[in-house]
Image (cartoon, rainbow, N blue to C red; front, side):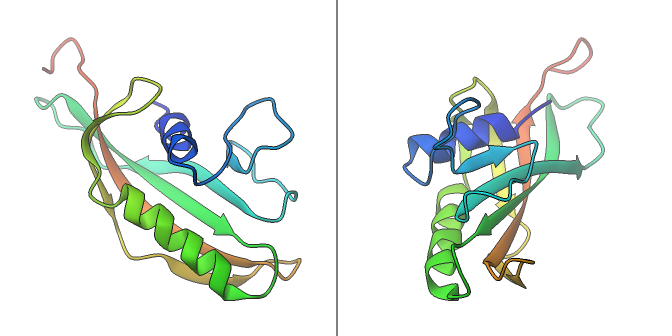
Length: 139
Protein backbone atom coordinates (compact mmCIF):
# COMPACT_ATOMS: atom_id res chain seq x y z
CA UNK A 1 0.00 0.00 0.00
CA UNK A 2 1.53 3.29 -1.08
CA UNK A 3 0.27 6.02 1.25
CA UNK A 4 2.96 8.54 0.39
CA UNK A 5 1.57 9.26 -3.08
CA UNK A 6 -1.75 10.38 -1.57
CA UNK A 7 0.01 12.40 1.14
CA UNK A 8 2.23 14.08 -1.48
CA UNK A 9 -0.85 15.10 -3.46
CA UNK A 10 -2.54 16.27 -0.26
CA UNK A 11 0.45 18.52 0.56
CA UNK A 12 0.39 19.79 -3.04
CA UNK A 13 -3.35 20.54 -2.90
CA UNK A 14 -2.76 22.51 0.32
CA UNK A 15 -0.05 24.68 -1.29
CA UNK A 16 2.95 23.31 0.61
CA UNK A 17 4.82 22.47 -2.58
CA UNK A 18 4.52 21.06 -6.07
CA UNK A 19 4.04 17.31 -6.52
CA UNK A 20 4.46 16.01 -10.04
CA UNK A 21 5.94 12.76 -11.28
CA UNK A 22 7.00 14.43 -14.53
CA UNK A 23 7.52 18.17 -13.97
CA UNK A 24 10.95 19.68 -13.42
CA UNK A 25 9.32 22.23 -11.09
CA UNK A 26 8.44 19.57 -8.47
CA UNK A 27 9.35 20.30 -4.85
CA UNK A 28 7.58 17.32 -3.22
CA UNK A 29 9.16 13.92 -3.87
CA UNK A 30 8.50 10.25 -3.15
CA UNK A 31 10.68 7.30 -4.00
CA UNK A 32 13.91 9.20 -4.52
CA UNK A 33 15.71 11.84 -2.51
CA UNK A 34 16.97 14.40 -5.05
CA UNK A 35 19.98 16.69 -4.75
CA UNK A 36 18.10 19.52 -6.49
CA UNK A 37 16.15 21.66 -5.96
CA UNK A 38 17.42 22.80 -2.59
CA UNK A 39 14.06 23.32 -0.86
CA UNK A 40 12.04 20.08 -0.89
CA UNK A 41 9.64 17.86 0.98
CA UNK A 42 10.48 14.16 0.71
CA UNK A 43 8.20 11.32 1.85
CA UNK A 44 9.05 7.66 2.33
CA UNK A 45 7.37 4.67 3.92
CA UNK A 46 9.49 2.62 6.29
CA UNK A 47 7.26 -0.05 7.82
CA UNK A 48 4.42 0.26 10.26
CA UNK A 49 2.56 -1.71 12.89
CA UNK A 50 1.42 -5.31 12.63
CA UNK A 51 -1.96 -5.44 10.87
CA UNK A 52 -5.07 -6.43 12.78
CA UNK A 53 -6.70 -9.71 11.85
CA UNK A 54 -10.17 -8.22 12.14
CA UNK A 55 -10.04 -4.46 11.71
CA UNK A 56 -10.05 -3.15 8.14
CA UNK A 57 -7.16 -0.73 8.41
CA UNK A 58 -3.37 -0.82 8.38
CA UNK A 59 -0.91 1.48 10.11
CA UNK A 60 1.94 2.66 7.90
CA UNK A 61 5.04 4.48 9.18
CA UNK A 62 5.93 7.52 7.07
CA UNK A 63 8.97 9.76 7.33
CA UNK A 64 8.79 13.29 5.99
CA UNK A 65 12.05 15.18 5.46
CA UNK A 66 11.80 18.93 4.91
CA UNK A 67 14.96 20.49 3.48
CA UNK A 68 15.68 24.20 3.25
CA UNK A 69 17.73 26.26 0.85
CA UNK A 70 20.68 27.10 3.09
CA UNK A 71 22.03 27.09 6.65
CA UNK A 72 19.33 29.46 7.92
CA UNK A 73 17.05 27.24 10.05
CA UNK A 74 14.12 29.66 10.26
CA UNK A 75 12.44 29.17 6.85
CA UNK A 76 12.73 25.39 6.92
CA UNK A 77 11.51 25.17 10.52
CA UNK A 78 8.45 27.24 9.58
CA UNK A 79 7.76 24.97 6.61
CA UNK A 80 8.23 21.85 8.78
CA UNK A 81 5.70 23.25 11.24
CA UNK A 82 3.26 23.86 8.37
CA UNK A 83 3.57 20.21 7.31
CA UNK A 84 3.04 19.13 10.93
CA UNK A 85 0.00 21.39 11.32
CA UNK A 86 -1.57 19.93 8.17
CA UNK A 87 -0.93 16.24 8.90
CA UNK A 88 -0.99 15.86 12.70
CA UNK A 89 -4.45 14.63 13.69
CA UNK A 90 -5.68 14.30 10.11
CA UNK A 91 -8.46 11.72 10.07
CA UNK A 92 -11.61 10.52 8.38
CA UNK A 93 -10.28 12.03 5.16
CA UNK A 94 -9.99 10.70 1.63
CA UNK A 95 -6.69 11.70 0.04
CA UNK A 96 -6.60 12.83 -3.61
CA UNK A 97 -5.54 9.34 -4.76
CA UNK A 98 -8.52 7.68 -3.04
CA UNK A 99 -6.65 6.45 0.05
CA UNK A 100 -8.87 6.84 3.11
CA UNK A 101 -6.98 8.06 6.20
CA UNK A 102 -8.54 6.88 9.45
CA UNK A 103 -5.98 8.80 11.50
CA UNK A 104 -2.54 10.35 11.16
CA UNK A 105 -0.37 10.78 14.24
CA UNK A 106 3.08 12.36 14.53
CA UNK A 107 5.58 10.50 16.67
CA UNK A 108 7.17 13.82 17.66
CA UNK A 109 6.99 17.47 16.58
CA UNK A 110 9.27 18.41 13.66
CA UNK A 111 12.83 17.61 14.66
CA UNK A 112 15.97 19.29 13.29
CA UNK A 113 18.48 16.97 11.63
CA UNK A 114 21.03 19.75 11.10
CA UNK A 115 22.92 20.41 7.87
CA UNK A 116 23.11 18.00 4.95
CA UNK A 117 26.38 17.53 3.02
CA UNK A 118 25.65 20.76 1.10
CA UNK A 119 24.96 22.92 4.17
CA UNK A 120 21.16 22.90 3.82
CA UNK A 121 19.08 22.62 6.99
CA UNK A 122 16.82 19.54 7.31
CA UNK A 123 13.93 18.65 9.59
CA UNK A 124 12.18 15.31 9.96
CA UNK A 125 8.66 14.35 10.93
CA UNK A 126 7.74 10.73 11.59
CA UNK A 127 4.10 9.71 11.31
CA UNK A 128 1.93 6.67 11.87
CA UNK A 129 -0.83 6.77 9.28
CA UNK A 130 -3.86 4.53 9.74
CA UNK A 131 -5.44 3.81 6.36
CA UNK A 132 -8.56 1.90 5.43
CA UNK A 133 -7.60 -1.43 3.87
CA UNK A 134 -10.39 -3.92 3.66
CA UNK A 135 -9.40 -7.45 2.74
CA UNK A 136 -11.30 -10.66 2.17
CA UNK A 137 -11.28 -11.43 5.90
CA UNK A 138 -11.46 -7.91 7.35
CA UNK A 139 -14.18 -5.30 7.14
